[in-house]
Length: 316
Picture 1 (cartoon, rainbow, N blue to C red):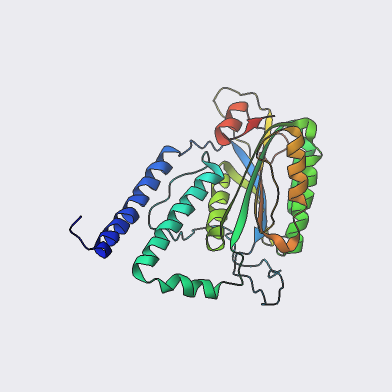
Picture 2 (cartoon, rainbow, N blue to C red):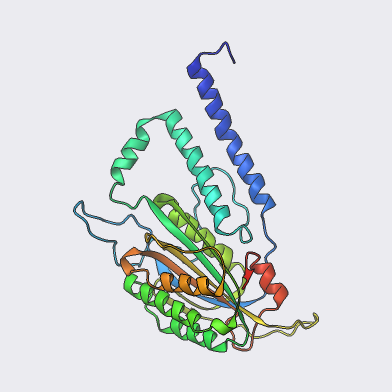
């Protein structure tokens, strides 16, 4: 390559870099693929809007109607040039790595094709937030926290989830419900990071699917103003009975807030994190999803089921 012109040598290097990154990313994702166990029924509530917000040059806020731009079910189109593999055990940071790699590939291709593309794109999106903070909080409760299941169920049935104000109320009430059960906290984990605005919806949807795949079925669902209730009768199994002792709750948030959250897990810091999360204002809340398992009052997860489905949980 020493005899090649500098421009040609740079193009070959860039092309090699672009071609190798998808292979490396795929290998990483294969290695971190978790073993998911659909242990019990669950429920979820939330909503959001990832449409580019209309922000006047002089200021303003986000569009307050959350009726569209958010995944409710069915297929998702992922704008990536290599296939997805399972996450779950990899958690939020596995997704952030994937997005970072994809962003690098995209930027490299743009530089190779037309340096002016990025400039024109930037001009069109100057009114959009540059980055969005993703938050994933998971808590494992003792199964005796039956009031928590009742609180979340009532909240899912009665909440208005189509507007930012309604979602902020769901977030606040969920945070309060979790804060009222400190004696039942056993495990917890918090992950947080920033992603580009254009990749935020894909990231959030992928996190949501990863968590929903852990549920045998969704008994209650209240997403973006659409409420669904289903009933799944208990089926007797011939498998040996396991001691059921836990309830798992996952809170997914996409926000523009600059929160000082701690990923170190202690009872005191968990309490502080819940208070901070519950105080996110509606204008800075882009999307929210609360998922809990199991939903039934007479159901619970065994220790093995909890730690298999939520391997990143840390003992408090």
